[in-house]
Amino acid sequence: MNYFDEDEIEEIAEGEVKVNPKGITATVNMPGSALESIAASIASRLENSTSRRIEKSVMEKVEQLVDDGVRKVIGDRAETLVREILDKPRQKTNEWGTPTGPTVTFAELIPGIVDSYLNTKVNDKGQVDSYHSDNKKTRAAWIIATMVREHIEPVTTNAVATVTKQARDVVAQKIAAFVSEQMVPAIEMKKGA
Image 1 (cartoon, one colour):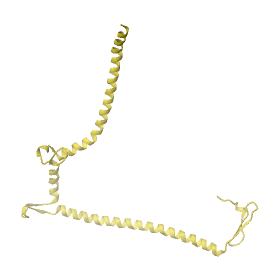
Image 2 (cartoon, rainbow, N blue to C red; image 1 turned 180 degrees about the vertical axis):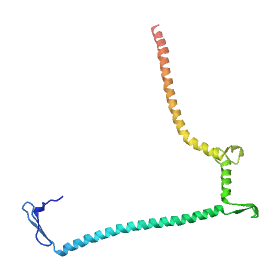
Image 3 (cartoon, rainbow, N blue to C red; image 1 turned 90 degrees about the horizontal axis):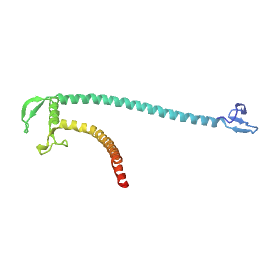
């Protein structure tokens, strides 16, 4: 917003400005060194602000590049190590460390371990119980039943609540109809007798 019209401001000499709004005259004298000082200060602030933004942007980009590089190197090395661990043949041993049977890899063992885990009999809480008679379901069946129950139980509870309310309403209507059809005439007959 400009409080003065262009024709009201008159530049008198270098470093001087004369403002004349509505007949009032004010003159501001600024030596060239003050203007240079203000300009230098503004330039310095702009330079500092710009350099901070550039530095921040460059640092973020460098950090991203380093992070990506580290992830790639670590990821490649981790994959190599995991492959090596999974694919390296290992000799089965007994409890004393004596080799028994053929060599196997972890990759060959994992499916058997998973199969054993999922086919282990568990109780209603999904735990192996010391009372074997309580272990009735396989862990896989228990996991599936638990997942289904978690999704079906709220829906079933809401449906039962809705049906119960509707049944109560119907019963209340039938009772009200019975009372109005059977009981009210009988009560009125007794009054009249």
